Image (cartoon, rainbow, N blue to C red; front, top):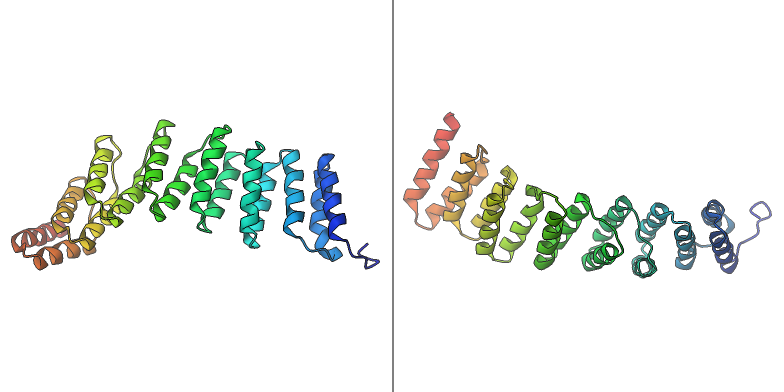
Length: 268
């Protein structure tokens, strides 16, 4: 057809891919799809959809979801969401690596609620999330202040036996601080420590910084000392935040003690 400069109509392309899919001839369906642009036929949303269901018919989900990611990059986001909903409703469940890749791609478009809904839907269908699933969703939900959902995801991960390491729960603490819920953040942080989920230097640095932004310099000073007791060395900026803040709010004695503490640490 290409040599004879014949153009392939949209209806013909759709029909060919659909028929190949129904008969399990997926390689041929993919080949026709890939060659369609050379035959003058635009790869529309409907053409993508026909190949998607051809792939799902033979349960090649990694290719199906790779095609979905391609659709997202081409700007077919709303159509993609409809397709994912339809695939989920019809019981098509991808492997976990494919699902994680898809969720990560869609989260970059800021469609966080859609991703969370999709997570709950596929879990009901039997998908077992892994640690990467929770990493992606907790970070995404934290960015849009879905605090309740973040806690639910964290609890789900713990129930599955995953340990909430610092980068996991740091997003929750930061989200609570940004909403002004410092008492809740401090309480949650304390709970993580009691349960043996030891914080790292980055968590303390973030918490001290957030306290500084909110004018909670005494708490920042306490966390500064606490992290050194755990063998974690504070960065210079943390000392600056604490000492400058304490001086500005009239707590000069405490500021002086922190300065002396910094000097003693530097000598060591």
